[in-house]
Length: 182
View 1 (spheres, rainbow, N blue to C red):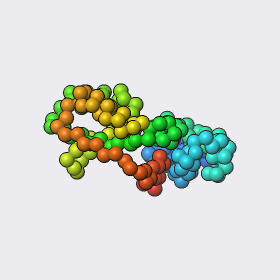
View 2: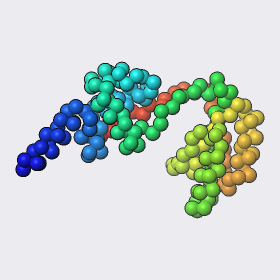
View 3: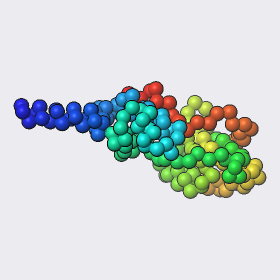
View 4: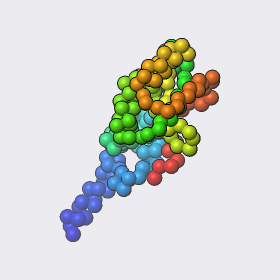
C-alpha cells in the first residue's frame, strides 16, 4: 500500500509540474495542449518562453508537452508556408481522375507516380462524384501544366481526366481546428 501511495504521489508531482501530461494516457489533449498547438500552428518560430508564458506554464513542462506531441505524431512537421506566386508557381490546377478498376497494383503504381512529382502538392481519393482521385498541382504556367499533364497521361492508366484551373484563391489555411479534439 505504501509503495502504491508513493507511485501516486510521484505521478501527481510529475503531472502537477507538467513533466508528463496524464491527458495523453487516455488519448485526450487538455486545454494547455490545445493552446500550445494553436500557437504553433500560427507561428512555429515563437520562442519556447513565449509559448510557455501564453499558455501559463513554465518552459520545461511546455517543452515536454511539445516533445510528447511530436513523439505521438500529433505534430508532424515544422514548416514554412510559401507564397506560390513568389516562387513562380502562379497556376494551381485541380486534376480529377477516374479509373475503371482499382487493383492493388494500380493503386501502388499511381501512388509511386504522384509521389515522384514535386508539382503534385496534394492527392486525395474521393467519393460522391464521378471522379476517384483529386490532385492539386502547382505550375508556373498553363503551358507548363499542359506538358506535365501529357506526361501523366503516359504514366497513369485512367478512364477519364479533367482539369480545373483556379482563378482566385479565396481561402487557404494550414491550421487545423482543434475544437473537435478529445
